Image 1 (spheres, helix red, strand yellow):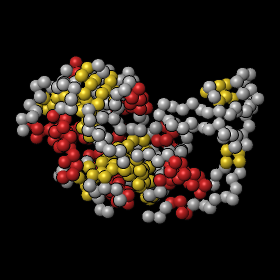
Image 2: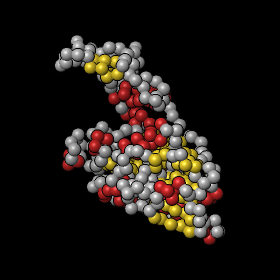
Image 3: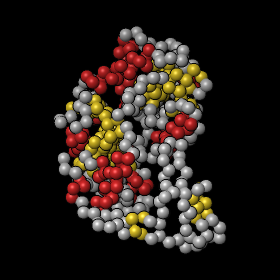
Image 4: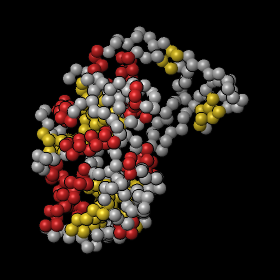
Length: 391
């Protein structure tokens, strides 16, 4: 597929510099960090911006003069985007992107852009979902597609196309990527237009989709979780899969700061709710699979599929039953097994919650069985959960 950057203007022979001047509006130096400050005479002192705990390089090097900012042509900006991606290549590769604003698919990562005036970017007015790609099939595409359409309705986002057209676009995007194992993430937005709070100036809703290939090895080892101190979302927003994930991000960061994998939210009544982007489930001492109900949390597609597949374990006698209900913290911590369930972690055993060891502190047999059932379902499940991609 031809790269979108091929039709962009040629770079200027020289990039003019923007000379930035600051007027003095204060009597004292305003310090932004211990190593960079805005002084009384209106100039920046050279230095480094503090790095976060997850950054390996400073955001601004001391050798860079802040005022010497080049004015880039379109092609120069694309070139710099490509260079930056090469310099900071991670474990995820972005193989293709569809944009209804561009009206097509690109396989050039530097062209995988969303307009800065999109209401989703500056106001968080967008919804999203994800479907796994396994052996050339999209797993539970229709289930995830139904959920994003419900989320869009709750967010009062009009659809740029009808459901069947969106479905075809998503499949075609995966086809263009040549990806046979990865994930497809897609967004519906109020679209670009202006920077106002109201979306009334957005001239058309937008659909974006990206095919992601994750090179990280799959890890099914047990994990530790903690109870989140970050306030849980109100049910109206928790049941909508919107791009407003700040509480989720802070909850995940809190867990990592405490040496855990994830943090568990409790609802306003103190019952177990969910993780930052996964559902929780338990196996009681009576061998019953127990999962918190979806009344105040996101209805997990993978979690619901697990409930269906778990019926086979009941028939085999590995489970005594399946129950979706309110779960107290005491019930959860006293369970024989605990697990997190989601499209990212699939089925992940929890060995410790706060200071409480779960069961015998080892990966439990039910979690292992459910993981095997889901993985097998991804590879050879019925047509209702596996949509073939025509490459």
